Length: 225
Image 1 (spheres, helix red, strand yellow):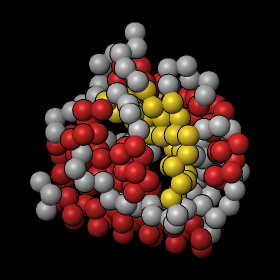
Image 2 (cartoon, one colour):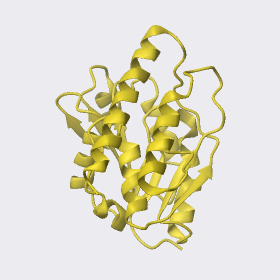
Image 3 (cartoon, rainbow, N blue to C red):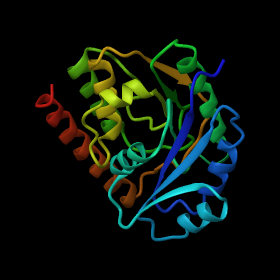
Protein backbone atom coordinates (compact mmCIF):
# COMPACT_ATOMS: atom_id res chain seq x y z
CA UNK A 1 0.00 0.00 0.00
CA UNK A 2 1.31 3.44 -0.98
CA UNK A 3 2.25 5.68 1.93
CA UNK A 4 3.34 8.98 0.41
CA UNK A 5 4.34 10.95 -2.68
CA UNK A 6 6.89 9.31 -4.95
CA UNK A 7 8.87 11.63 -7.19
CA UNK A 8 11.41 10.56 -9.82
CA UNK A 9 14.19 12.97 -10.71
CA UNK A 10 16.35 12.52 -13.79
CA UNK A 11 19.61 14.47 -13.99
CA UNK A 12 20.41 14.71 -17.70
CA UNK A 13 23.27 16.09 -19.78
CA UNK A 14 23.10 15.84 -23.58
CA UNK A 15 20.67 12.93 -23.58
CA UNK A 16 18.63 13.85 -26.67
CA UNK A 17 18.96 10.32 -28.08
CA UNK A 18 17.54 8.54 -25.02
CA UNK A 19 15.67 10.94 -22.75
CA UNK A 20 12.29 10.51 -24.52
CA UNK A 21 12.37 6.70 -24.21
CA UNK A 22 13.57 6.96 -20.61
CA UNK A 23 10.65 9.21 -19.64
CA UNK A 24 8.06 7.23 -21.61
CA UNK A 25 9.09 4.00 -19.91
CA UNK A 26 9.25 5.61 -16.48
CA UNK A 27 5.69 6.88 -16.95
CA UNK A 28 4.57 3.24 -17.06
CA UNK A 29 5.38 2.95 -13.35
CA UNK A 30 2.02 3.80 -11.78
CA UNK A 31 3.57 4.25 -8.33
CA UNK A 32 5.45 7.35 -9.47
CA UNK A 33 3.46 10.56 -8.91
CA UNK A 34 5.75 13.04 -10.62
CA UNK A 35 8.77 13.07 -12.93
CA UNK A 36 11.23 15.97 -12.90
CA UNK A 37 14.14 16.34 -15.30
CA UNK A 38 17.13 18.50 -14.40
CA UNK A 39 18.89 19.56 -17.58
CA UNK A 40 22.48 20.03 -16.47
CA UNK A 41 23.48 22.61 -19.07
CA UNK A 42 22.91 20.45 -22.14
CA UNK A 43 24.03 21.82 -25.49
CA UNK A 44 21.72 19.56 -27.50
CA UNK A 45 17.90 19.34 -27.66
CA UNK A 46 17.39 17.54 -24.32
CA UNK A 47 15.41 20.43 -22.81
CA UNK A 48 13.09 20.95 -25.76
CA UNK A 49 12.28 17.22 -25.91
CA UNK A 50 11.38 17.24 -22.20
CA UNK A 51 9.27 20.40 -22.54
CA UNK A 52 7.39 18.98 -25.51
CA UNK A 53 6.51 15.93 -23.41
CA UNK A 54 4.96 18.17 -20.74
CA UNK A 55 7.40 16.96 -18.09
CA UNK A 56 8.55 19.24 -15.27
CA UNK A 57 11.92 20.69 -16.20
CA UNK A 58 14.62 22.40 -14.14
CA UNK A 59 17.15 23.93 -16.52
CA UNK A 60 20.65 24.84 -15.39
CA UNK A 61 22.45 27.46 -17.46
CA UNK A 62 25.72 25.53 -17.53
CA UNK A 63 27.02 22.04 -16.79
CA UNK A 64 27.56 21.74 -13.05
CA UNK A 65 27.61 17.99 -12.53
CA UNK A 66 25.17 15.26 -11.56
CA UNK A 67 25.47 15.88 -7.83
CA UNK A 68 24.74 19.58 -8.23
CA UNK A 69 21.71 18.78 -10.39
CA UNK A 70 20.34 16.38 -7.77
CA UNK A 71 20.80 18.97 -5.01
CA UNK A 72 18.93 21.59 -7.05
CA UNK A 73 16.04 19.21 -7.62
CA UNK A 74 15.81 18.17 -3.98
CA UNK A 75 15.45 21.84 -2.99
CA UNK A 76 12.50 22.32 -5.34
CA UNK A 77 10.42 19.14 -5.28
CA UNK A 78 7.95 17.91 -2.70
CA UNK A 79 8.33 14.19 -2.03
CA UNK A 80 8.12 11.41 0.54
CA UNK A 81 10.17 8.98 -1.54
CA UNK A 82 12.83 10.06 -4.00
CA UNK A 83 13.61 8.03 -7.11
CA UNK A 84 16.90 8.75 -8.88
CA UNK A 85 17.14 7.60 -12.49
CA UNK A 86 19.72 8.36 -15.17
CA UNK A 87 18.61 9.82 -18.47
CA UNK A 88 20.15 7.07 -20.61
CA UNK A 89 18.13 4.10 -19.33
CA UNK A 90 15.86 4.20 -22.35
CA UNK A 91 13.27 1.43 -22.55
CA UNK A 92 14.57 -0.22 -19.37
CA UNK A 93 13.76 2.65 -16.99
CA UNK A 94 10.54 1.03 -15.74
CA UNK A 95 12.71 -1.56 -13.98
CA UNK A 96 13.04 1.12 -11.30
CA UNK A 97 9.72 -0.21 -9.97
CA UNK A 98 11.66 -3.14 -8.50
CA UNK A 99 13.48 -0.66 -6.24
CA UNK A 100 10.38 1.15 -5.03
CA UNK A 101 8.63 -1.79 -3.38
CA UNK A 102 11.36 -2.72 -0.85
CA UNK A 103 11.47 0.89 0.39
CA UNK A 104 7.68 1.28 0.49
CA UNK A 105 7.41 -2.00 2.40
CA UNK A 106 10.12 -1.00 4.92
CA UNK A 107 12.43 -3.81 3.85
CA UNK A 108 15.11 -1.13 3.50
CA UNK A 109 15.52 2.63 3.76
CA UNK A 110 17.32 2.81 0.42
CA UNK A 111 17.25 0.50 -2.61
CA UNK A 112 19.99 0.48 -5.26
CA UNK A 113 19.85 -1.17 -8.68
CA UNK A 114 22.26 -3.98 -9.44
CA UNK A 115 22.79 -4.14 -13.20
CA UNK A 116 23.48 -7.29 -15.22
CA UNK A 117 26.94 -7.80 -16.68
CA UNK A 118 27.82 -5.22 -19.36
CA UNK A 119 27.41 -6.23 -23.00
CA UNK A 120 30.86 -4.98 -24.01
CA UNK A 121 34.27 -4.68 -22.42
CA UNK A 122 34.81 -1.38 -20.66
CA UNK A 123 37.54 -0.40 -18.24
CA UNK A 124 39.63 -2.61 -16.00
CA UNK A 125 37.59 -2.17 -12.84
CA UNK A 126 39.82 0.41 -11.12
CA UNK A 127 36.99 2.90 -10.55
CA UNK A 128 34.57 0.26 -9.27
CA UNK A 129 37.15 -1.23 -6.90
CA UNK A 130 38.12 2.21 -5.59
CA UNK A 131 34.48 3.11 -4.89
CA UNK A 132 33.74 -0.21 -3.20
CA UNK A 133 36.89 0.04 -1.11
CA UNK A 134 36.07 3.63 -0.17
CA UNK A 135 32.66 2.67 1.19
CA UNK A 136 34.19 -0.22 3.14
CA UNK A 137 36.90 1.99 4.67
CA UNK A 138 34.31 4.51 5.86
CA UNK A 139 31.53 2.16 6.94
CA UNK A 140 32.84 -1.39 7.23
CA UNK A 141 30.11 -2.47 4.78
CA UNK A 142 30.63 -4.19 1.42
CA UNK A 143 28.31 -2.72 -1.21
CA UNK A 144 28.59 -3.98 -4.80
CA UNK A 145 26.42 -1.25 -6.30
CA UNK A 146 28.31 1.77 -4.96
CA UNK A 147 28.43 3.44 -8.39
CA UNK A 148 24.86 2.71 -9.45
CA UNK A 149 22.86 5.90 -9.93
CA UNK A 150 19.48 4.16 -9.96
CA UNK A 151 18.19 4.51 -6.40
CA UNK A 152 15.12 5.00 -4.21
CA UNK A 153 15.36 6.90 -0.90
CA UNK A 154 13.04 7.63 1.95
CA UNK A 155 12.88 11.38 2.52
CA UNK A 156 14.33 11.07 6.03
CA UNK A 157 17.51 9.56 4.58
CA UNK A 158 17.99 12.39 2.06
CA UNK A 159 17.54 14.93 4.86
CA UNK A 160 20.40 13.34 6.81
CA UNK A 161 22.86 13.50 3.90
CA UNK A 162 24.85 16.68 4.44
CA UNK A 163 27.48 16.26 1.74
CA UNK A 164 26.81 15.60 -1.94
CA UNK A 165 29.71 16.50 -4.25
CA UNK A 166 28.86 18.15 -7.54
CA UNK A 167 30.30 15.55 -9.88
CA UNK A 168 31.27 11.86 -10.00
CA UNK A 169 31.59 11.32 -6.26
CA UNK A 170 27.85 11.72 -5.68
CA UNK A 171 26.94 8.02 -5.37
CA UNK A 172 29.74 7.10 -3.00
CA UNK A 173 29.07 10.13 -0.77
CA UNK A 174 25.36 9.32 -0.54
CA UNK A 175 26.09 5.65 0.16
CA UNK A 176 28.55 6.43 2.94
CA UNK A 177 26.20 8.99 4.55
CA UNK A 178 23.30 6.52 4.44
CA UNK A 179 25.28 3.80 6.21
CA UNK A 180 26.91 6.17 8.71
CA UNK A 181 23.48 7.36 9.80
CA UNK A 182 22.44 3.76 10.47
CA UNK A 183 20.03 3.37 7.55
CA UNK A 184 19.73 0.12 5.62
CA UNK A 185 20.46 -0.47 1.93
CA UNK A 186 19.02 -3.22 -0.24
CA UNK A 187 20.71 -4.07 -3.53
CA UNK A 188 18.13 -5.20 -6.09
CA UNK A 189 18.82 -7.13 -9.29
CA UNK A 190 17.35 -5.37 -12.33
CA UNK A 191 17.35 -5.84 -16.10
CA UNK A 192 18.36 -2.26 -16.77
CA UNK A 193 20.75 -1.16 -19.47
CA UNK A 194 22.35 2.21 -20.03
CA UNK A 195 25.04 3.69 -22.23
CA UNK A 196 28.17 1.61 -21.76
CA UNK A 197 31.67 2.99 -22.18
CA UNK A 198 34.25 1.07 -24.15
CA UNK A 199 37.99 1.23 -24.44
CA UNK A 200 38.64 4.16 -26.76
CA UNK A 201 40.61 7.22 -25.69
CA UNK A 202 37.55 9.31 -24.81
CA UNK A 203 36.21 6.55 -22.55
CA UNK A 204 39.50 6.25 -20.67
CA UNK A 205 39.59 10.02 -20.16
CA UNK A 206 36.05 9.84 -18.75
CA UNK A 207 37.00 7.04 -16.35
CA UNK A 208 40.14 8.92 -15.32
CA UNK A 209 38.06 11.95 -14.29
CA UNK A 210 35.65 9.64 -12.49
CA UNK A 211 38.51 7.94 -10.63
CA UNK A 212 40.01 11.18 -9.33
CA UNK A 213 36.63 12.65 -8.37
CA UNK A 214 35.84 9.52 -6.36
CA UNK A 215 39.28 9.53 -4.76
CA UNK A 216 38.79 13.18 -3.77
CA UNK A 217 35.37 12.34 -2.31
CA UNK A 218 36.82 9.46 -0.25
CA UNK A 219 39.46 11.82 1.19
CA UNK A 220 36.93 14.58 1.95
CA UNK A 221 34.71 12.07 3.78
CA UNK A 222 37.51 11.51 6.30
CA UNK A 223 37.11 15.13 7.36
CA UNK A 224 33.30 15.05 7.45
CA UNK A 225 32.70 12.36 10.05
